[in-house]
Image (cartoon, rainbow, N blue to C red; front, side):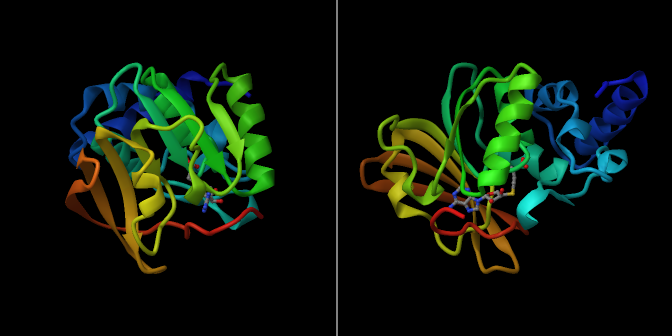
Length: 213
Ligand code: SAH
């Protein structure tokens, strides 16, 4: 696999379109400029990597739309060195963007095939998250608390158990709602039992499911 001048050119155009759509966090935009999204696409979809759309990956899942990745990442207010838990590794693309930002990343995937393929690909590209195969609803109590938690699948309700794994002052970004559409929630943990929730509008994700595949 190569990252050619043509790929970089297409990526630049995509990043400019994200800016035009309102993404203004320069660190997030430059991290996305550094990650070759075409490496993360399923066979046959590589050509479409720089369109602003979600596409199918293995196990009936999807690689999130670049705008959604940029939006969720911006809501997290990522700072170099933050310890972040991602639920839903999927293709590994969002993980790569967070690692570009200097995040200490823990990521969980419940589909064995994606857990394996993302781990191999990320390593090949020089990205080293702590990857786990399991149910993201359980989080990673051993490594908690986290500065931030990012859920990249649609939950029917806010995963309360995961809020306990968040530091005070920490942020959880979670799309919550029905199977058809979710509200992008940014939840700030103010104290052990107090939270402030902002709603950042409608998005559509594959469902966050319980258990392992
Ligand atoms: N961040 C991914 C998005 C993948 S789509 C990317 O950049 O490609 C969401 C992913 O969440 C899917 O791979 C799905 O299998 C996974 N998922 C759904 N429910 C989960 C759960 N309870 N625990 C861990 N992963 C889950």
